[in-house]
Length: 300
Image (cartoon, rainbow, N blue to C red; front, side, top):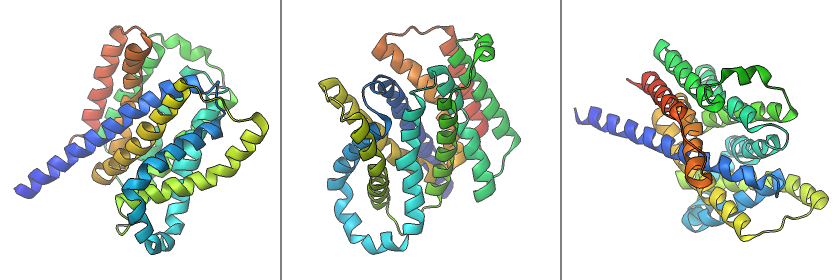
């Protein structure tokens, strides 16, 4: 009986971790919207992950050094994981934002949980149940309702830009990254995993950023820019990736992916608090549909 209670408690922790990570990531989209015109994509990613590495170093640096033999033994796993999750995923979002509209990016981002569920079925053997499909489509409908503000006719006016294709690739890559962190070797601790993937991902990002800076120059770092970089470096990188890794380990990538559907809802709330954007009936109905879909898809 106690084992069953403990299992249920851990599952709730998994939900909370995934929800908290998604909530912090929603702020990343708001911050990145303003930074994209000031800082080039790879340069922004370089600053972001440098901040994350420096913040994590006092917490996990010593253990990571002690685990160096374990890291070397598992480089075949850590390198692709770092490349997908750290080097490429967020950088592609910043690249996409230069040529795509906010509406297109938001709509394409909703494909991420679908890719996670498909990959989890192929590589982990997770079942795709009727409840999961029903919940997925209910949440997806809520997201589209929110993004279009109830006017579905705007979907007919969408045009495809190069940024849309980059965003699709980013969604696919994050789906693959979520599967890889579920397959994390047990001998790699949480702190060592984050520290090693952050450093490896940053090292692989460096040539891209150096080339970009040599062409476009280094951005001017005002107080607003520094504050924004600290937010995405500490919150959207260090804290969110820690929470997401824990959530995937507890509830699996498919369930965590469905909770990711709440991201645009939190973005709307953040825009209301930070930018003063209005909230209407669409937000309430969308919230009910999104969280209702998540509950239906994830209930045991």
